Amino acid sequence: MTQLSGACLCGAVSYKGNADIKMTMNCHCVDCRKVTGSTYGTLLFVVEDSVDITGKTNVFHHKSDRGSDMQKLFCSSCGSQMFTRNSARQGVIGIRAGTVDQTDVVKPTANLFNDSAFPSTPMDDTIPLHDKMPT
Image (cartoon, rainbow, N blue to C red; front, side):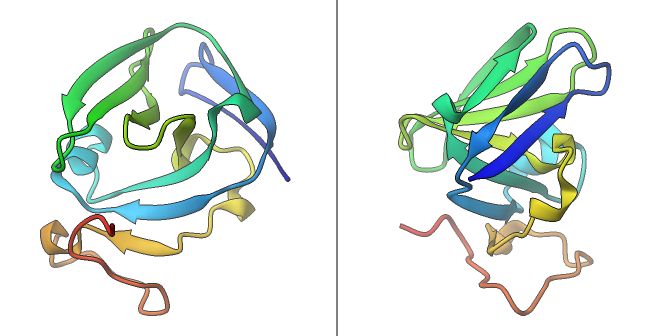
């Protein structure tokens, strides 16, 4: 188990808990680029019940490239994107790595959607690259 905690930019939304990190990935899909305003987003995936979330979030709903229902959860005050849910992964929540207090636990194990990555984005050649989401 890993102790996780973090908060949005203004501190109105926070989380804490002991969780097993199921996967950590860098996602280069267009959705992650747009929602983060950066060249990619890094996510830690944990069982949702293992973290306690406090504060008010707004939710943006959309479809993934495979047709699953996606939710992006934002702080309703400062707009920081905090979490993501995918109907294909029931009971799992993605936590945006930039919000995590324990920076030493952010160890990506894959780069996803490499086919839409910015050509200038440096890639760690020690972790797998996937053009899409692996099945």
